[in-house]
Image 1 (cartoon, helix red, strand yellow):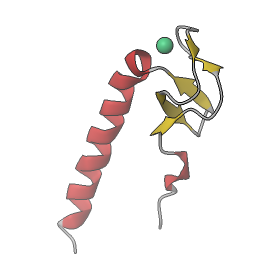
Image 2 (image 1 turned 60 degrees about the vertical axis):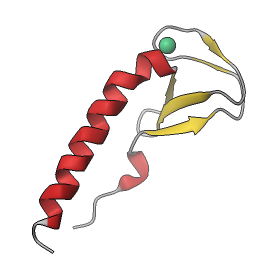
Image 3 (image 1 turned 180 degrees about the vertical axis):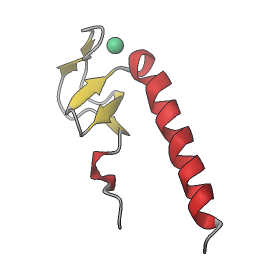
Image 4 (image 1 turned 90 degrees about the vertical axis):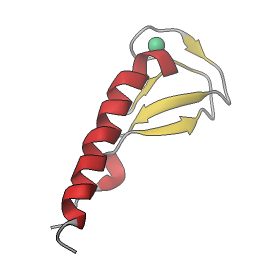
Length: 70
Ligand SMILES: [Zn+2]
């Protein structure tokens, strides 16, 4: 079974101004933000960083785990 990676959060550059989903700060076009496609939410760096890092770590663990069987 293939995992759907389309819902994975990612770091993007904003293409349009948008408020952070957590703190409501206005984010400007061109700044780096965290985007969660599953919820379609945008988080500023300070709000999104912890959960994004947690996601990367869990993904890394998963990849290491899968590599053992290749
Ligand atoms: Zn924020």
